[in-house]
Image (cartoon, rainbow, N blue to C red; front, side, top):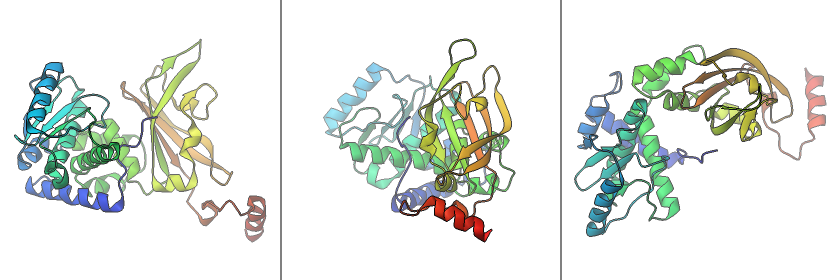
Length: 320
């Protein structure tokens, strides 16, 4: 699975949200749909150059400039070179070969480097996918830029007002992706990550066919709500899904969607709970959405290891 690319401390998150809110206000972007990315970049005083491919020649040009300026470069958390931010000239370069739904998020990611003062003041050039800084600092800056992009794209609290007053299900984030102008992947992550419900998103790589009837789908990333993490250990899903896996029936094969169906999961207390699962194949990845349907009660709280689970269950059953 891919490593964590968006977790911040509460202090770091508050700082990023403050600058995201400021940019949204300066661009008068709140309540405008889809989120006006170009207006946001203009408010950040950034110019996008998206008519060039980010190839080796362009990278060498930026590296020469970085050498002359005596500045450092940053590694991007993204999987390949997809964007560059030149702090000196306030330029953002985007690789046009990216899937179209992903481009707005990449633009806002690069805008995050330019809008967070502690980053933009420190570097005259941020060049994605080269590592010359301390790895911890590099990783932090990229996580901050990712969170900034998500906060701006989904207009901070505005997303919550539209997302969580509806019945839970695939159609909600799919509709919100169109509303905000974001990719399904980014929207599903935001949907689950901000949900008060016990829910989980499992992102799968495209399904690989095996022997007749067999298949394998590697798990790229797991995003779980806080409530889901309190009830379940998401790592129990393992590194991949294949025949015989508890989620095998939820993996689309030869179809785009798997509509809600019931499955059983074992919680941290060893109890079996009923959940619903549905899935959507975007062609780039498979998004599997899980929802625990039972109310979250005190009996579901994870117990310290020193407590005898059998004794606890006996006492619980006696009280009930």
